[in-house]
Length: 253
Length: 253
DNA sequence: CGACCGTTTGAATCACCTCAAGAGCGGTGG
DNA sequence: CCACCGCTCTTGAGGTGATTCAAACGGTCG
Image (cartoon, rainbow over all chains, first blue to last red; front, side, top):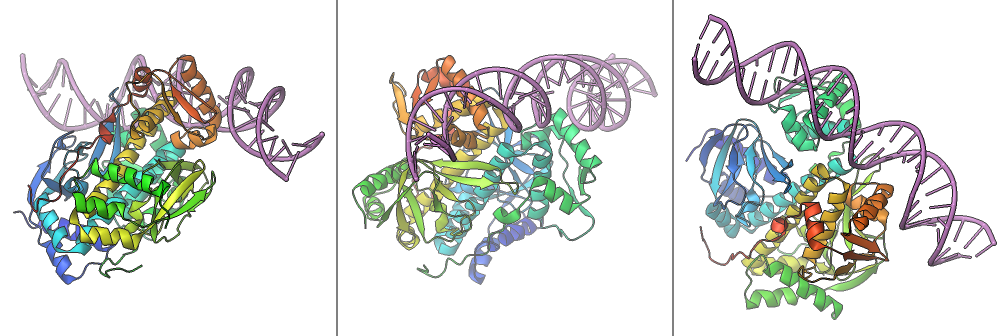
């Protein structure tokens, strides 16, 4: 059972949970005690294949992973982006046959946590069961925002929105001047995230750069003007900000 | 506490649950015994407002409801469509503050079920808790397909896909010749579902009609050729078909 | 009756895609 | 070592899809 990097990822995951659900000391311990096994993946590699049945969930250590969908015609679209501390497929606990493949977007480390252990923690502590359920809801809310992003925004706003979302999810300090994060993906992959073709992604990035909003070179995103970028994206982080909810009280109404 | 139409909707909801999760007699009883209160809404009316905190979930009786998102610029996009037997916001049990409004798409009846009762059923029966969690995952999978739909498909395929999905979710008999269902919404609303403007929806419907695939008049969708429509949509119902999973065995691996 | 809404069609414009080509870069094999 | 391949980024030109503005028609409601 791997620790070290795994402990860090698990701590991030716990933070993610407790940001949305109240967990007491015992419950936190139970989460932090989850056993796991480390795996590394190269960019583009399948972490969980399409239709595959898994018996563990995948906690992202570093790098980026994403779930994909494709049409019968073979057009690819990425559905959900996962960063360090995300349990990319916590839903597999209740739906173990993957309806979308999970792939490494960049080189990334994954910590596999057995479903049996997750289920045990949920069965032992009601609050953990609710926290897991809620975590899935938050994921769904993020996907719902993607629907809005693809359905209503034009290319520059779509790309700006993705950058804004990652910055907030990574908990970067928005007030800081130098707002930068590693994002080692190709323009083609970025296109799959926002439903655009690589060529148009290229032109759009050029425009955003020319407008002094953001750059993306050498696998690094550099936000030159948070305000400008957020405005261009029409970004409202409300959908990410769920305040913690307490599921301990038996029947709070 | 309303019954009649409510019982029917609840039976549909139970069917939806048991299609995906195994529930025993006692558990089924518990679901069917849920108390509820009927409400009726006119097209466009808010069922749950943006940011509103609710203490009940909304079971759709008849008609159609949808959740919406909008950009800071005011562009509307519908995120999720709900039909009879759907618990439109079961997620509100663990996330009571609505991050997207729920509105009546057509005239529709809603049966409100108190969160306290849902939570009680989940606390009493582990399998129900898992079934609820799983239900949310299925909803998320449908939204994920919308991302694919908006990101990768052109207008005719998008609209065709929506019609195919509704037909399958309504459990219509695909093999039948006359494949028809009521769908009393405007072209503008359909546009909000698929991320297109009303004018273009109109032209696209005209094209689909000319190709002998589908018509939509007087609030009725008439699928002239299921095969042709499904092919045009590149429709693959896999994402809807989750076989039932049994959560009773304490620690099945 | 007039006002309004939804549908339908036309024409012009804009956004995005497709095809194409060149430059840079890393990896491979002769 | 160099020639070559494949992949990514970049830019151009032309085509398609979707939007926008506009106008006409029928139906409904006050």
